[in-house]
Length: 255
Image (cartoon, rainbow, N blue to C red; front, side):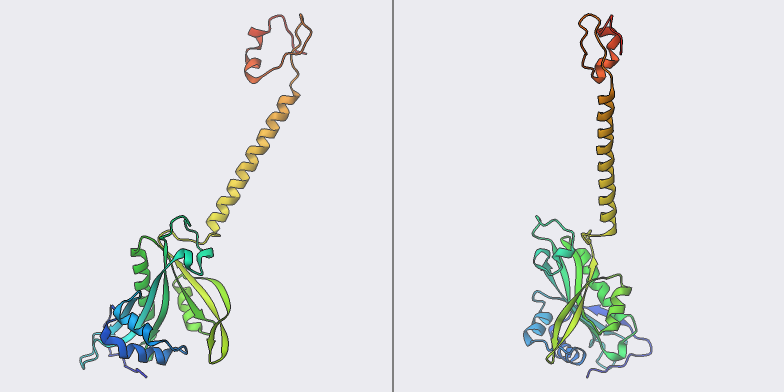
């Protein structure tokens, strides 16, 4: 187990994960996660193949450990239309290039926990997502019993949108997962409170217009048309003709 102890005054810095981090990265993953990752995954991380990553290091060490990993986060860009959260994201489906950032793994070695390192790593991911114009959200899964992670994402304003039954299979046993989303660059839930309020107001406005139009038509039907003394017939009366009644119907009286 990687068990580095922080110095009295740790200086935490962040950088991309490099090929030289391979051994430490594999060991920390093995220590922290019940899921075993393939060698290909670690090769993709350290070489930046379709995966973006950040490493946390403590520069205050002077014994050759100043560049050793004490924390990490890995993520991948995916197309919004191909993701599992596409139905929970309001975006223009006609724009096929819209993307999401999916957090794959996040971890901090035991001796450096409760120092805000995990929060800082997540902020690095959010900052990256904000820099991608087509990105609409950051999302991830959390196993249902990881209360510390659930608390962290809630504190950082992620939204828990769904509980997935039996998402993880670990040692022959199924575990549920929570799906968390953080919207960026105008991305939002299709059922956000603002959209619901806007829809209700639009409905009420249209209903009022429709009711007003019916009332106006009913009032028009109640108007008694003027009778001509010469022909003794009713003259159809429009709004404009009522205004010009005196000029057009001389010798007529209204009945």
